Image 1 (tube, rainbow, N blue to C red):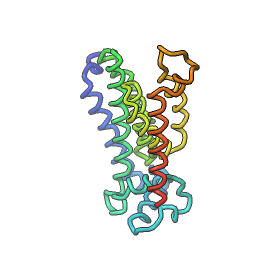
Image 2: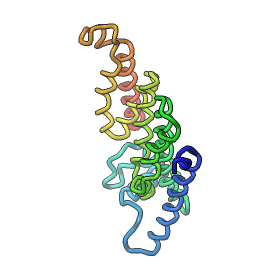
Image 3: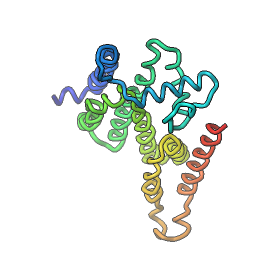
Image 4: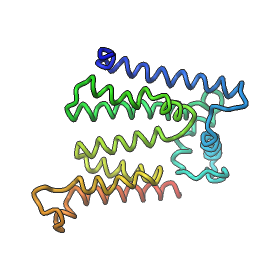
Length: 224
């Protein structure tokens, strides 16, 4: 087993294979069972994408309460046929990318390959995670954004972290809860913790301005 986790390519191959198999199974179950595999939310997403493809607002689809960006990302589903599954494939790809980023973060922190891969496999080889994305839940995309935000923060790529935070909050509101933790993590140890110069130090101001600008810009573009 240890040899398996020491070969990241093998773990990722199985993770991808699992999701491909579930995508294929989803088509069979949807066609042959009254209990559909595809999540009802995915039907809402793709209906909204249909409205977008006709030059109309995605909010003309009742119960669509998400960013128009999601409907635009799922635009290819409006082409019909196998393209209908492209959104699920996108969400599943998000799962795999998230697992890869978890692995890279752990390696960057000095963890050995085998152990890093074991932790990443909790996500990559988790059948529940794979099931959620292949049923058509968009959480896989949000997971990529959140893990990328963590990676950017740890690498002190403040402008990128701010942009990802703004994007995440635009996509769904709850990534906002990470803002306070990141803000305090950007403390300058050479200054007093509660001094004004530290509370409003350069990295913190960059994070706040970039995230707010990204969030408001996306809102403005999507509103237009």
